[in-house]
Image (cartoon, rainbow over all chains, first blue to last red; front, side):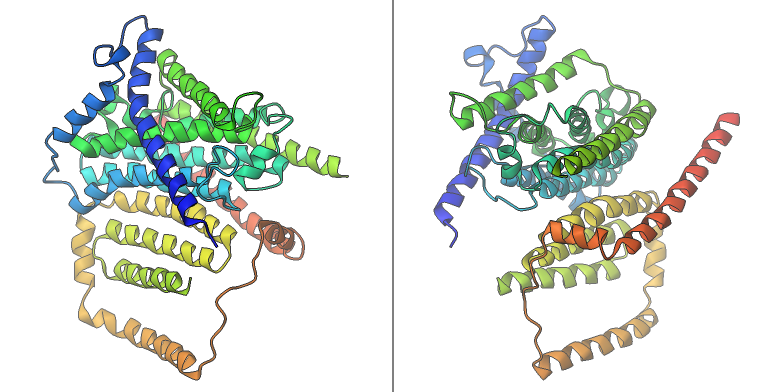
Length: 318
Length: 167
């Protein structure tokens, strides 16, 4: 018998904290970017400016919600929901601490990959339904980028799966009690992190929404809360990427002295800061460089990593 | 659990119907995505978790994205053309064939020979061992089939790009 109240409580806590954190991240990112670029960032509202996201939210809710007359209405409206739903669904399989997970699926890793591949629809369909040339160009770029980087994402995290001998995320975390997988799987970690950045379309892989050339890419026509959903979805996928990196390569909740949840949060925040630092420090790629880098550098490295890992595990097993 | 199965099955059938009857190609493909997700849920309910995940990753995530990518480029003209193709006479043949299948299903239900709901629980390991053990020739043949496809695509792409550079 499933313990319904425990599950419901877990779902409520995870949903609530994910959405709050995603909202707060908007402020955190702007402040950190400010610090690294030697300016202030939003610092007026509340202590240190921490209520900025709330003000942004009120503004975005009261803005006119405009659907362009030339757009494909039904699809246009559904699209922003897909981003948020797929990102939140992935959090269902993420073990934050022992027994603190909504669904401890046998195929957790595959579920995460499935959700991230469904998230691609939001970008593609959103650009098409807007019926706008800039949006369409953005979504064409997004298709090429997401499809290529999805392949490496799967291949580069398979090394960790082989070492743990399971697709279950809790098993993967428990297999790292004595040694984090980032040490034997450094190439896998690099490949996964890059692919994750590309999937979340963050700098240096944010070509689908390159504002210098495509207005705002696939979400050019979106306004009001529909744009807000794309925005929150992007921060949810940053959270998801850092959570998955921590689980697969950095020992999940394991760590001395502090309670598991705190360790998980600290490690996750480290990666979020790293992702923001990358945005502050690096320019974006050119699109053909991005694709050839993926297929000619990351792909062979990920395959070699998989081959060597498999070989070593078999050799050790005898 | 049986209720969940029937809901998923109903969604699958309705979505597939819309795939066939929709005049707008992109909308039809979106319904096909729904069909695939519902099918994956059915796999999951039958105990085949691995197949359910792969159904979404490969069919829902990769292949349908490529389909939509191509169809998106067709533009609104295709809708008019599709509408003219949907005449009443085009329905006769498929309807007869579908009725035959319906009759078979009705006979199976009436004869009371129900297959059981749950299949044996296939674990990822068992599937892998079966694929790389007794069925290794099938895997090798499939990969041989994919390799020429890959080389062919590379060849076509390469010729196009060198032409584009020369002119």
